[in-house]
Length: 95
Image (cartoon, one colour):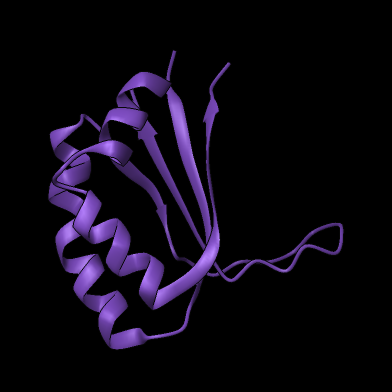
């Protein structure tokens, strides 16, 4: 069952975040993932949640998503992203 990593990101250091963006795709692809959404325009339809930058990744399953998240390839980029932004990130199983 496909799993989705969903992030709401508030970039606080654009230059450092740009370095993150340049390196992250190769790590996602190595773990059979792909971008579905990568920071396009957001229009709120209901509720009070005000997203910043939304990112949605698709992986074959949640185990593969976690392998990517915990991988030695992604770890330094994850740390860079955490320094360059604030946000929420979670994995959701598809139905």
